[in-house]
Length: 166
Image 1 (tube, rainbow, N blue to C red):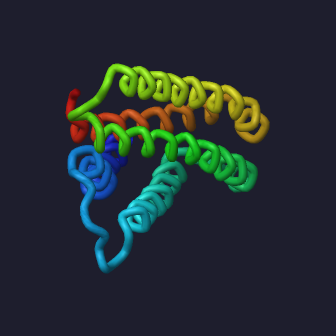
Image 2 (image 1 turned 120 degrees about the horizontal axis):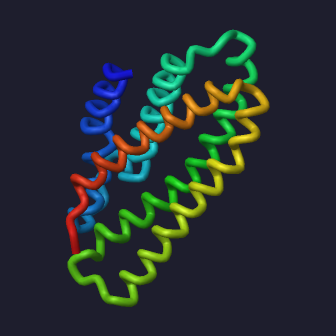
């Protein structure tokens, strides 16, 4: 897991975080003649999803039967998690565009949105626990949640490095 963690940290630092960091620090730029920033972010997110799935596969030690049952639940979970990630990206982008002139009202609204995202994430983890438990033994469910937690911690760390304080 150590080498995978190092690999994921490097991957995040080189791909996802510059895109989010730029969104959090730069003023809006003129539209480019090539791909739109949203298209670029979608490409980065698709690459991250594929690499994340590979990382999970390498670390779960699933039997063939477990894998056949696990991946559909994983894919559904990732789709639901993606909706929360979309909300977080929207929040970070808003912050990046407004942090220099943030009002108390806007800061309060952002804090409420952040807490709602965190609450919804905890509820999502709780709602999927029995779904994963139906297809994997408890030790492997715990292992999967541990992997998810490590990935999230690395992403949050890398993201935090690029977001300035108000």
